[in-house]
Amino acid sequence: MKDTIIKLDNVWKTYQMGEVKVNALRGLDLEIKKGEFVAIMGPSGSGKSTAVNMVGALDIPSKGKVYLEKHDISKLSESDLAQIRGKKIGFIFQQFNLINTLSALENVALPMVFQGIERDERLEIGKKLLERVGLQERIYHKPTELSGGEQQRVAIARSLANDPEVVLADEPTGNLDSKTGEVVIKFLENLNKDGKTIIVVTHDANVAKHAHRIEFLKDGKIVKRTKGGTQ
Image: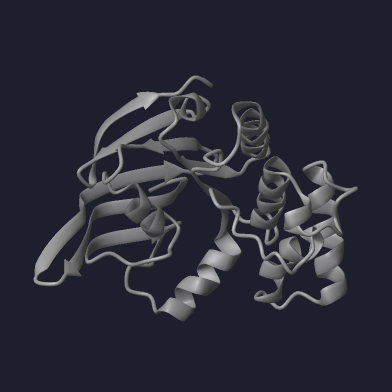
């Protein structure tokens, strides 16, 4: 597994729905190497959200193994998973998931609280990250005072708060117009050029084409993989 940062090995996820068992993932195999830009596509109900949970260490499999770098995380406790997530993986969500009572700067600084970083350092890092995404004039604005594109740029800055190796974006352009979505994807491309591993989960082929490769998910497993458009 040289240079592999995330590996899913025969991963199954089964949910008990009343008396019925539902297999959201059915032997999912996926390997992502450091520095890659990978898109995961699939129709509704294909298991994309569950796959995100596995790749992002948000959940553990019913069967199979999940490796982050070379460590099997499939048997870790929630508290241990939370620590790994905080240090290794940055998240960008379709709904932005910003806290409306906090300023842009406070939202970006929040993940650093859980890593024990002192307040002054958190704010200094937060200002630099917001400057990096072009929001240096908006750092004290609350999310309700920002456009959708600006909110997503705050979310991108927040995802970088603890300098993660992996940035996982779940439908990052889903709530944005096409022009603003292109700006967000450009940020992700630039992060990839800077050495970050980028994983984008999307139903939008125009987003996926920016990746190095595209993994197609159906019925809880990968059924096809193709090259993206940034070779």
